[in-house]
Every structure is written in structure tokens, then in C-alpha cells.
Amino acid sequence: MGRVLEIPYAEVDRVAKLVPNQLNITLQQALDQEPKLRDLVETDTRVKELMGIARSLEGLARPRLDSRRRRGHFGGPLTDHVPLYKGANDEIVTQYSMGDVEKIGLVKFDFLGLKTLTMIRRAENLINERHPDDPPLVMEQMPFDDPKTFALLSSGKTIGLFQLESSGMRDLLTGLKPDRFEDIIAIIALYRPGPMDLIPDFIKRKQGRIPIVTKCLNSNRS
Image (cartoon, rainbow, N blue to C red; front, side, top):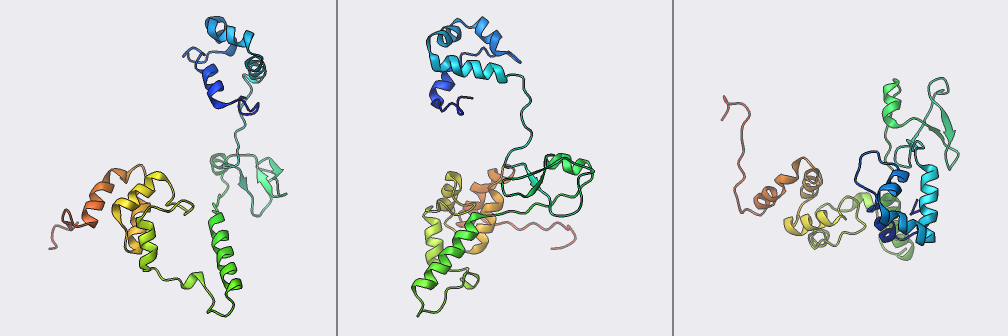
């Protein structure tokens, strides 16, 4: 509610921290138990408005769907199985979450849309328009072993580059110093909760500081 009222996060956080750390406590119970919270509501008009609206919304069910969980429908009648509504662009969208859609026996397909691809295409078009006398730039024909590209990746200057722009990934790039496309594939696969602990060893082996040991799964083979 604080975000809706455009109250600074620090102020909302100050109010929230006054709510006693008690499971399933209501806002009224919090006001009854914490004098500082009650005094703040009585003396600060913004906090009074915040608490009043929050109390009126308390207990209402949260919507199960948000922009990340809505799923579009790409064909076939569904009105006998799920409730539908029109999205912002008049697309037909199910009101069930993706997990519920699967539970009732419908098939779900994920289609990933990346603005990065649009920006790459726009850059390609702009370059070709500004240099009409040069051989056309075709992204699909770009080399995968360009030294300048790997030097840029190794510098960690990858903000805006899909999957390589987080601070952790930039640290990984500067530590690994990738020099081949396979290195990029490897670090994207490694930068996950499961195998992240193996990243330091991977970097050491990449840089030759510890040997790479090949193990054979079949004991009968050498």
C-alpha cells in the first residue's frame, strides 16, 4: 500500500518494523500491542492514511496472477475448462496460473520473448542504413571467435547484455577471462543455485592452475 501511495520505502519500512513479530497478527492487534505504532498513526497523517487503507484491504485474497504468471492461449476452445479474459492487447488469456493449467490436463507451451533480439535487429538496420556503400552487416554471419568481443566480455562491461549483466555474472567474466564461445555456454550453465559452488574450480582449470582430470564411467575401459 505504501508503494501505491508513493510513500518512500524507508518510511514504510519504519512502520512495518513496528508491527510485532507474531504469526498471523492483524493490523488492529499490532496497534493494540505496540504503543509506538499507535502513536505514529495518531501523529502522522500519511501513516494514518496508509494504515487506514491497509486495514480495509486486510484479509482480501491476493490475485494469483501477475504479469509473469499470466499465460496466453494459442488455439482451441477453452471456455469449457478455464475462465478467460482479454489482456492489454486483446489477447485471450487464461485466469488460471501455469501450474493449475497443467493440473487440469491442458498442455502449456512457453514462448520466450526478448527485447534484446529486437535491439540487435534495430542496430543491424541502423548500421546498414548509415553505411549503404559497405558490405551489409548480417548478424547471423558474425564470427564466434572475435578477439575484441571476448576482450570486452572479459572486462565485465556487459550491462544490458542478456544473461551476462548481473553483478555476479560480471565478476565471473572478469575472473574467468573467456576466450571461446564454449566458455560462455559453460558459465551460463554454471551460474545456477546447484552448480555455483563449482565455479572457482572451473576457473582454476580453465586457467591451468589445477589439472583437468578425465574420469571414465565404465571401469572396463581405459
